[in-house]
Structures are given as C-alpha cells and as structure tokens.
Length: 340
Ligand code: TXA
Ligand code: MG
Image (cartoon, rainbow, N blue to C red):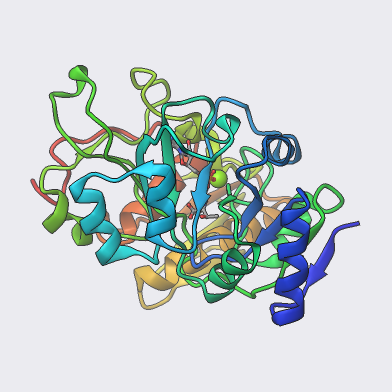
C-alpha cells in the first residue's frame, strides 16, 4: 500500500524518515511531482528505475536544499554560479561535471561523467530536503513514457502499490518540468556552441537569454548524436489516444484541447486557458491531457486535437510536450527563435 502523507510537520518528518531508510516517496515540486529516493544509496536509486519502468540509461535529476550543497557534488562553471543566484530555488536544472568526491550513486546519472542538479522552489520540497538532509534523486513520478503528474492523485494512478508514500502538496503551480541546461564542455560536432538547452521548461528561453546569449537549442530528435538522454525521446509524454496538433477545425471523432475560445463543433473540450494565458495553460497541460484522454476514450472518441499555442515564453515548453505527446520529433532550431 502507498500511504498518502499530509504536508504538515509530521507528514514531512515521516517522508524524510522513509527516504533515509531507502524507501521511495513522491513529493510535490513547483513543476511536477518527483519520485524521491536517497541519491547516495544505489539500491534506493535502482528502486526508482524499477518502479517507473525507466530504462537504466536515462539519468535522473538530483534535488538539493541549496546551491552550496549541489555544488559540493557537481562542479559549477562561472555561468552556473550566476544562473543559480538568479533562478534557484526554481525550475532550472543544470547539467555539470561530477566532482571526484561526488556522493551520488553512479546509477543515478546512468554512469555519465555529468550530474543534473536543481534546487526546487516548492516550500514542501525544500522542507523535505532539509528534514531528510540527503540529496534526492527525483524523476517525474509517472510510469516511464507517460504524462507527468501534477497532483497527488495522478501519482497514485501511476504508482500505487509501487512506492512507500506520496507527500500531498496539492496542485503543482508551474505544471511543466524544469528547464534543463547543459553547461558541460560542448562536443565538437555542435559548432562549439555553449551552453545547450536540453529541455525547455519552467524557466523560459527569454529569461535565460541575457545570461546565455547564443544558447543552442538541441532538444528533441531521437538519437541526436547520442548526446541527449532518452528523456528526450519523442514519445516521452504519451496519452493513449493519438494527438493532432495545430488544429483549426475538429473532426467528429475528436476531443479538443482548447487554448482560447473553443473551435465550433467540439463535443468534448478541455480548456487550457480561455484568455490565452500561457502560465495557466502550462499549469493545466498534463492534467488536461490526462483528463481528455480518459474522457475521450470513455465517450468512444478516437483522437485528441490541440489548438495552436504561440512559441513564446512557457509556450515553448508546452509545445515541446505536445510534440512529444503527438509522437513528433521536436526539431533542433538554430538560432533559437528568440534570437532570430
Ligand atoms: O521539473 C523537473 O525537472 C522534475 C521535478 C520532479 O524536479 N523532474 C523531472 O525529471 O522532470 P525527469 O527524470 O522526468 O527528467 C529529467 C530529464 C531527463 O530528460 C533526463 O534525460 C535529463 O533530465 N537528465 C538527467 N541527468 C542528465 C545528465 N547528466 N545529462 C543530460 N541529461 C540529463
Ligand atoms: Mg519525466
């Protein structure tokens, strides 16, 4: 049985004790729910891969209570220090070189010489990290290949009976995962450009641009030079029904993911934001995909259609997730649209 723990002092203390004992506990972050385990404990980390059905070659993000703690395991570059000051705690993950004295289990980063680190902003995540006093490996708390959970009930749908507990922090305010930025030395085949945006997310490209200048957008495409983790696989965020993007009309067998006034004729609609607010749309994207997929199947519909979403601000992360949900390769764009 998976326990549902309240987000009070007792619940956090219980979650911390379970984690310290090597158990798996899902916890809320400002982006999505993470599936936490003691990142220094190889057995606990292995249990994450087993519970999610995640391929062992897909590395995990390590969560810390402070930048200082993160940089004790991962070597910061000058840019990493600047970005940490500006965006941590918050939805930015930095890929850095592992330090020699790094305490993190090799399996957590799939035996790579690099480590993905982040300091989450959610008060419950921070309280848990402080109480547990260990770094937490934390992939999104879904079965591998499925939509990320943004509330405790979604975690239970995915992982009930496979993990010790879920710390219930209500809805995740941002709703799409962290931005993943690789600051490690650039492979020669990438024009020597540096740093690299591996995944658009909660910190927008526009917010990063003053710091990173010509960040090379390399997201996407399966098997890009073997450079990216398979977390970049196109089918990472899949609903069970086929998804059609940039819909300007709606078929008789389709349910609609609306952004702005819904297309006429839709029988089943999930509204991401009637006022075309990208922040609200991001916060409700995964919940909407989950709900629409389920309800459309129940109603005997055959597919989902999503209205167009502008490729700006959080729209970039939303479109990236929609492309993956539609099994389309996300295309590496250079220069990134915000610089063009
Ligand atoms: O918002 C988030 O980042 C959430 C919350 C829970 O923090 N976590 C999350 O984890 O989305 P996950 O495992 O679902 O996605 C982590 C992504 C994967 O695409 C993985 O391949 C990539 O980060 N990643 C992790 N370590 C890496 C590394 N050393 N080098 C390159 N990519 C890495
Ligand atoms: Mg994930």
